[in-house]
Amino acid sequence: MNATWLKLKAAETILSEALGMLGLSGARGYRLLGQAFKRIAKTEQQQLIAEWFCNWVAEGSPGAAWLNRVLRELHPNVRKRYLAHSIVDIFFRDPKIFAEYKAKHGFRPPSVMLISPTMRCNYRCVGCYAANYTKEDDLPPELFERVLEEAKRISLKFVTVLGGEPFVYKPLPEIFERHQDMPFQVFTNGSLIDEKMARKLAELGNVAPMISLEGFEHETDARRGKGAFERACWAMDNLREAGCIFGFSVMVTRNNVDVVTSEEFIDFLVEKGVLYGWYFLYMPVGRDPDINLMPTPEQRNQLRLAGKYFRATRPILIADFWNDAPLTAGCISGGRSYFHINHKGDVEPCIFVHFATHNIRECSLEEALNSPFFKGLRRMQPFCYNTLRPCPIIDHPKIVRTVIRKYGARPTHEGAESLFSEEIVCGLQRYAEGVKRIFDPVWEREYEKNWAAKWEELSDFPPGRVETRKKGYYLSQLKEGIKVGTR
View 1 (tube, rainbow, N blue to C red):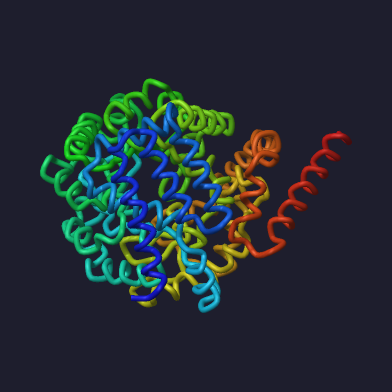
View 2: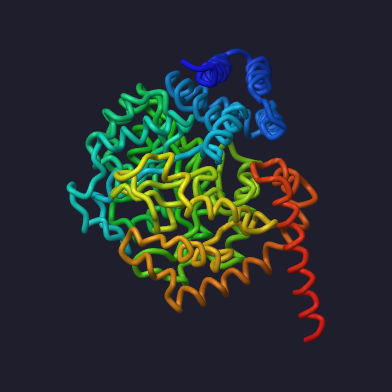
């Protein structure tokens, strides 16, 4: 039992006790929680996070209402094992962990691991090919657990489980139970979460299902089949009654963006008991990608504004995987903060980059994270000083193609090579130009001079790299201005 482990446990205990004290009078409970955050904040970045959270949960704010929901609706085990562990493991890890690990291995351990133990699913959604997979294609449970143990050894304890439909993977609940020191976030259609399963997850306390929706009944059933929305609502009701934390996951397309950014939709989620959730842009990767399903650059900005508005007015935490990239100082792929292991054991830099050079069946987790492919990606991050344009796939599409070719990464899914097709290459280039046109003025007006540039400087990049990206950004702006002026 080393000193690092003891520090993590101490921080988790402090925070879980503070969350447990929320049953006291509102003002005292908030004050105790604020004190807990400040006690475990070590770095300047962590202090900024603690300050933001304390302001967000001040009396009369949406955050205060959110905390009241946490107290009123969640099982005590959930507050202790999921909330406290997640907050510490992702946001408040002791910086000495990073320093010691980097000195030994040459890189800092990521905060989150994504893993897809199966690609099987009980749904037949439009555009999905889960019906082609069988149980024999699943990741063996013993390999799954070996990876979890290796992750814990590098102080990586937050795990996101995807699929397919994760709950068709029968060993999953037992794996959750054997690893109660790890919080698990599970993206699911919800159809297999009956009352018994919901009670089991609440008692375990370390699992948060993310219920996948496309909007309301019309949008969800159109893609997922008749009755999918009703079953998702049934799952949310079961989870709420059991006291299990759960959230939402929405794939935002050109067709559903107005619905999923409406007040009616967010109010519906709050009423159902959702405490947090995710917006993901449709990505034209894999089989039969369709550029025309991507939200336009203007719609992407609409999504950004909606997220800001709802965080300021509703008791729900909304995360936007692209528009919130300034909070992570840009792209987090390649093991900088996260990575993905698929059902075959391939270690991919991102859930949307279906290419790999290493497989967990043939190497350790550390070897995969320290591969030339992953190191090459990390050396290029951030890909732009403007971290509202973080993505090497859709915002800087030449980058992902270059790094795949340079390191000889092989495709891990059928259709992955479509990323190199003329239609996708040209379509993504046009899209990236549109994003630049919309988001560069937004960055300069709302982010750079406010907080995001400082946050980027405080992040994990080597000295001088952010300044280099900044110079490159403004040189590009100057060249663009000269071009416009000479037309």
